[in-house]
Length: 176
Image (tube, rainbow, N blue to C red; front, side, top):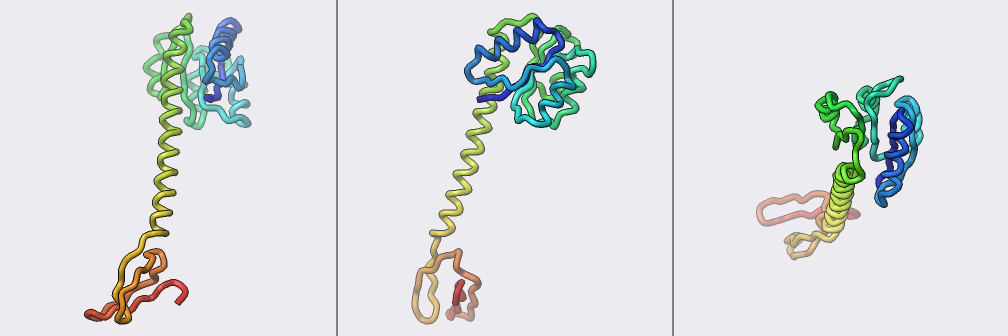
């Protein structure tokens, strides 16, 4: 589930984005904000993945709002102003929707985010699995050591150090 906020000062545009989000199973609408300042307050207390942001707003424009965030959100600009697209993408926006936009256009942008979120989650899961496997493998890793005139299997994790003088090896393991 991708948690999102819709930010727009125009009531009709905000209603449209809200209805699109509510129609989309993978999205959870956390807040609807009429200004960038209102959205800043929401972000202080709420975990959010995705911001749908209008650019032309009275108190703070959407570009400045995105600059003021921690940069840890996916961004889709929703605006009637094509001239800010390059600046929007410089702020790492995933998409830039020109008003009025259809649900199909909304979904194309949203599917990019859903794919990215899925990819990030799979990467985190793979990293965790690798770390766990490495930890388990190091606990089970053994070597054969010829010491004290006999050969023995020793867990690598238990070896404190080895001393060698020619063919003679003195083994120091944890707890001995």
